[in-house]
Amino acid sequence: MDRCIVLVDAGYLLGAAATLLTGDAARARLSVDHAGLIQQIRERAQTETGQPLLRIYWFDGAPDRVPQPEHRRLRVMPRVTVRLGMLTRVDGRSQQKGVDAAMHAQLTELARHKAACDIVLITGDGDLLPGVMAAKEHGVAMHLWAVQAADGAYNQSEDLVAEADERQLLDRTWLTRAITAAEPAPLDELVQPAPQPPTHSAAPSGPIPAPARTPTPGDLARSAPTVALRWSSDSGSVDPDDKIPLLETLTTSRQVWLDREQDLSVSGEPHEVGKIFAARWAERLPREHAADLLARLDHAHPRIPRSLDSELLRYAARFGTVANDTLDISDDHRVQLRAGFWTGIEQSTDALSAQTP
Image 1 (tube, rainbow, N blue to C red):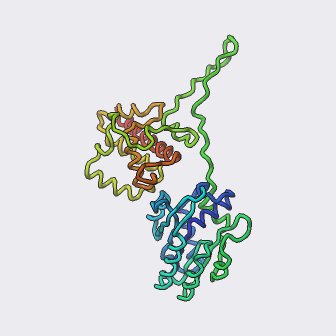
Image 2: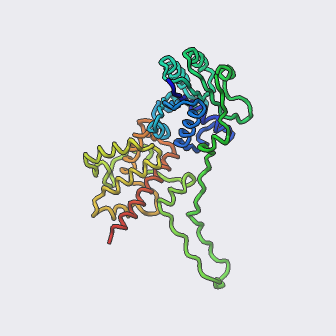
Image 3: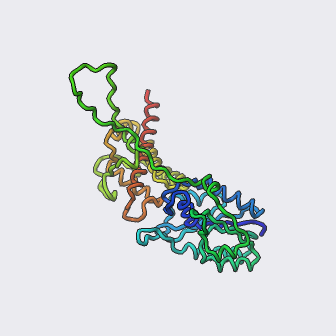
């Protein structure tokens, strides 16, 4: 009983933080260090309640309740439990469904079973008021944390604020230790404009500049999202007609088991997924063919062979990177997957070169 629990409404926490830091409630405008944020919440909860932490419940929405990369990172962290509701689009805006009901049910169940003497809520939803009132009747001290509002006013239900036993503010200084406004990726000046012909026939003075280097696929991938990277197909459902050996055919039954074990710790970030896939594929290529096949991929035209493209998309689907069975995938995630793929290929090429006498 002498312990504390934290219930986090991620939609409120990150949406209010986005409004404060960027002027827009879109969470995509934020860069979040989830490990750092969880540690901050844990330390502050223990300090303010004077009790050790039992658990942090992270409530969020996801399309079809499929865990997204951030949820995969969070749910393997110590003392963190992720609960997902539905995420839908209404009039072009994302809306959570079922999150407040799940929080209410969890709050009342924890209080009824006397799982903690102090419960911290990070939410602004007035629908939790009955749950807060019931928890207090079971002898639980209720702490309500608010995210600093952009306009200086409240961004929480007034009744919820009034009912809480203790109230604290998560101000800009505290938030920005782990949450910052995302900066757009700068365009790498990789592709130089073609040199213009001289306007006169006079001999140039000084050394002649070296011609611009042709960018590699990895160069182009790292310049994302401003450089469009093409895929061989829209859905990945294509015949393996390019004679490239697939990872599936190069993988033994024992390696399948080991890969699945490793995948449990993969966050699901598209770049990481692409890198892991490429590294496994390149590592398992027969050595007598590896140099030739990797050389065929490492040229200035950033295209993954069609059959390998299809297999990469199917692999990414395991992590929720692809939202549904038709392998629809956003342009941003396509770019990130490809960037990760080329990173893995380049690292494998470097390793292969180091082994070559």
